[in-house]
Image (cartoon, helix red, strand yellow):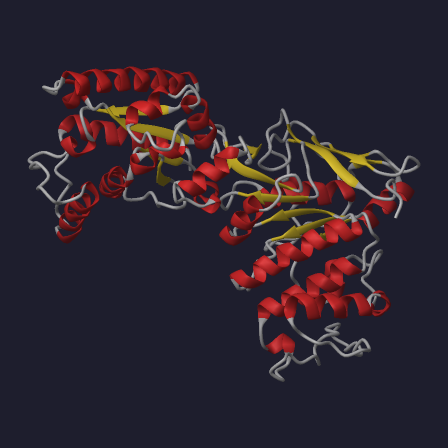
Length: 493
């Protein structure tokens, strides 16, 4: 295949289309496989539909085609979508659309002939069970196209689904479901058995019929798929990227696809996280960040899905801090949902050395004196654009009788203060708890000898949960700080 015989999306500009601001937003740095993640309502389908709209494909979502007058964010301004492309020299290098208010006909470039070419090379896939629904009357997915690619479809299905298809393409039924008579390895009708395998098969057949070097848009491919099957699906896309030079844009809620994508070769896979800004406009940011951050995240016991799924992250020093914050937010911000509106994750505790310069020196002084720590923490935290930073002051250790300990933790506090200032410069919420997070609880006795901080925190949590009337016994100062934090989390929604 010639190097020039392909179409690639290089960047996309969208303005005034539904949740996109009238000033517009550009998205670039696309790879061979591009995964778009974010909570419901962040704008994933809007982004995909803007591309479809520009290429003259209809929208595909639960509501069918959008009503035109609902597409305008600002009803007084036009919608504009621009897609810059890399492809054959004689073919268009960009596609654009302008839809003006009170006009039923958008202005599209290139014109009809070249526009038809792009429509054949940039193709959306959903998960209906009739092939004709994948396309429009002008570009139907013909039964003959499936027959032409049948041998490749059989090879893919055997390799990734473990299903041996017949040597000859089965006859097409009148209702367009050409695979209806196929049986799986247990003799059950495929489309009446595993929905996950059936959907995978439909995507194989749909993708295989397209010319090499095409752009394929896939919305939520994980529907009905077991995690193991999702892993196989991502491997399948990697094979087609290499073998057919396809470019894939995928929207997903699957934590398994997110985790697999990060674990894979980041040169071939890009992750974009969608969220809403303070004005309710969609923003799209590359989620890869500083490459080492994903390794650090894994070393700390977290997964990429943990940091990508939630609207924002509250970063705390260790697992016991996480337990306390979780209890307090549930008590004072009961409408907030952990894992969706926010997540609490820890960056330190016994794992401080993961960020330190020398593994054998596991004390906090080494961590905070390491010149690389601030940048590594900022990079780690920035895997999700919304984050807050909570840290103990360790002030009681500064008054320790041992002068060496006192000097050590005075140095630590200076480094923490310096880092907190960096967080504030980045306009992120910080809370330096004085002296320790446990001290926020009124009447909390000293931790018994032989009981770990985590065990003590769980004991507190179980007591609060058992007593529904308990407000957590927070001091007034601590309650005010937690409510302040909750107000920040609400802005992430």
